[in-house]
Figure 1: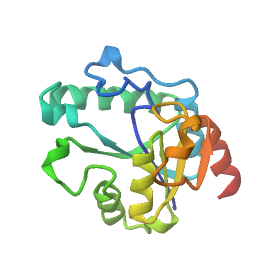
Figure 2: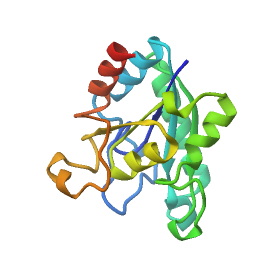
Figure 3: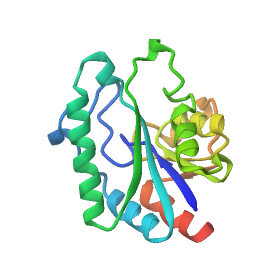
Length: 181
């Protein structure tokens, strides 16, 4: 089984901006091509997981109930086009909590690998930040950085880590993975 992790904000849906959160269903907007990309990966035998920091819950900016409603709607919309997300993993802790699940730590990825019994070294993590690249590296997974969210190619000289692959968006990354794996 081919396993892929996706960050959420900036990969699946529009990045809300630095220090901001998707705090309601109304503010959750799929990025162009994201649902199609997930459907293509699903149709080609990839098992897809979401791993995302959602500290707004821990900060009280929005509730766990709101996060659950956004997630349910996201999964339903993806399934309507033939995509399937196996499971969603969120870290809702604040940065200062020091938990093992907040990216760039690899706790969310390790939890999925334990639950679904797969090797992280044969997995990919697609994210829109260098933190996502660091998370992939910490877990031993391959990293794919896309430019549909926070990170920009122009910042390359300041990156703390080098991604294994870069693409403009999730659809471009999906098309590559389908051909390569």
